[in-house]
Length: 153
Image 1: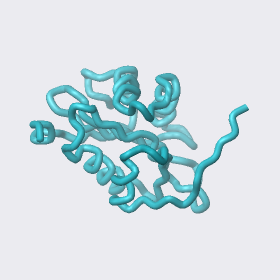
Image 2: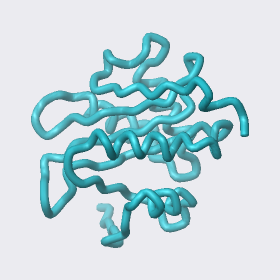
Image 3: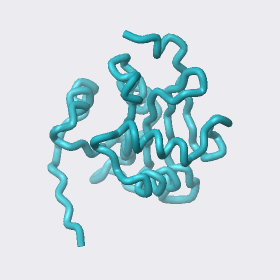
Image 4: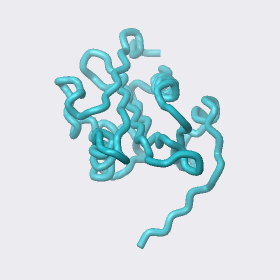
């Protein structure tokens, strides 16, 4: 096990201007894009998601949790608040990403547990069937209720 995590700090960011001075929204999007491979969305999709999460008007918002050490991101989690309740969960876990060099240190688990404690209501996430992270989600209490199907026009 490497030294990551010894001085790891978790930061909660609700607005773009709340990002650490050494990090831009574009830098965060690039970190997510690179660290989510091979399950990443496009950089444009990630940037759009972050814009919506950092909005504070009705129907938008959420937060980003960053696991940082020495002005470097080791992990990031993005939650989007949905305007729904009951039939669709109130929160959507959009991204959980850990730097490939920092994996195996419990960072993803730490980020998810922190998010679970900070969300009011239920949380949904989408995960591909072959993504090994599905085991972590199972262990943390997530269950598979539906198979998502999409039609692209």
